[in-house]
Length: 507
Image (cartoon, rainbow, N blue to C red; front, side, top):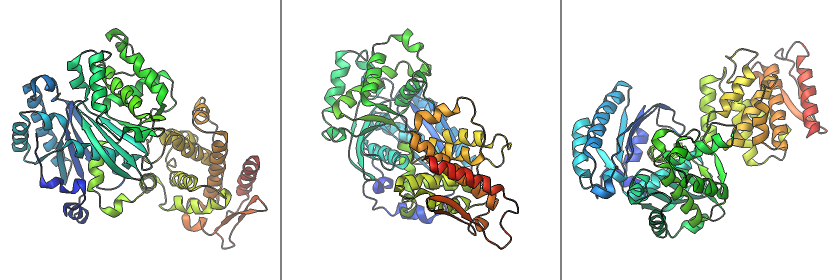
C-alpha cells in the first residue's frame, strides 16, 4: 500500500515548515498512537521536550498483522478491536488535555489490501488523520528513537515488530542507510517452526538484501521491540542481573547467540517454564530470537544492546525544535529531576563546579556523569532521615535514565548514597561491585563525601556554597569558609573534610 501524506515531508530532509510551526506553537501535551501489527498503543507525554515524561502508556492486543502473509488482509476481528481502541484513545486524549496527537500506522496497515479501507474508517471514527509510514520512514524513526536514548550509538539499529524488521545504520548521531524487511514473527510463523530450515533460509535471504550489515562488525547491534525486550527479561532473570532496567542492558554477541539457539530448540512446555516470559510471548519468542541470531551472524557485532526507545520516541524526537534536539539527554533528564525534587534549583550545578578541583584530569564523559550525579544529589530530602541514602540509591538504579549505561546509573546511585553517609543495605554493595570497577567505586565515594560536606556547609543553598571554596593544597583537600557569618558555627564540617582526605589518599 502506498499512502503518502504531506504531513511526512519533514521525515527525510526536514524541509517542511511544520516542524518550525510546532516549535513555535505552545504544544503543551503531545501524544502518539502507534497502530502496529501486534498492538495499538496510545502514549501521552507531559510536554514536547527533550526529556518528555510518559504520563499514560496504554496498549491493546489487536493482532492486525495476524495471518497477513496468508490472506493479504487485516482480520475483521482485529479491525473492530482497533476501531474501538482508537475511539477510546481519542476520548482519553481529550480528557487528559492533549493538545497535539499523531496517529501512525506501520507494516500491517501499510501492506494489507484492505489497509486503505481501514484507514478511512478509522479516520472517520476518531476525526483525526492517520499517517501510514513507509518502511524506510519507519526504520528512520525507530533509529532516531534509539539515538534519543543512546546518543553515542555506533552500529546497527534493528526494530522487530510483529510484521516487519527495520534496520538502520547509526553513528555520529546520524541515521543512514535504512531498510525494511518482512521478517516479523507473525509472518514467519506462517512458514513453519522457528528452527526449521525454511524459516532460516527466508530470514537469511532477506538479510542478504541489506548490504550495509557488515558495517556493524565489532560494533554494537541495538535491538528494539517487545519480543526482543521479552528475551532480555529472560536473560536478566536467568543471570540474576542486579538491575531490572532493560534500556541499555547488553549481552556479548556470542552469549546472545547461544541463548537464542537454546530457545529455538525448546518445545511449548519448556517455553512455559522460562522465567519472566509472559504467556503471550511464548509463541513468538523463538522466531524473534531466530531473527536476532541470524542478524548477529550477518553483521558480526561485538555485543547486542537493548533499547527501550524506538518508533514512538523517534516520532517525538523529529517533532522537537532544533535547539531542543541538541540537549544532552542525561543532563536534561537530571535537570528535570532536580527541578521537581530538589529543595533549591541550581544546587546540582553549583556542587558540580565546587567539586571540580577534586577531579583533576577527568575525561569529558566522567565530568558529564559527575554533573548528572550532582543534579540528583538532593532527591532524597523528603524521605526518612535514616533511609535517604538507600532510597535515593534504589531510585537512581531504577530510573532508566537516557544517555547513560548501567555502570553510569550505578556510579550516580553510589555517589548519592555516599552523600548521605548511611550503612549500606544488605546485598546492595554487590550490585555496585558487579557494575563498577574498583576505581569507579572510589571515584563515586569521593564525590559522595564531597557532596555531603557541601550540603553541611551550605544547607543546600547555592549562593552560600558559592561563598566557600574547596581546593587541593599540595594534593590534599582543603576548605576555605567566608567570614560573612554564613559559615557553620561548629566544626562538624571538619570530620567530613577528614573523610574526604582519607578517600582521596586511598585513590
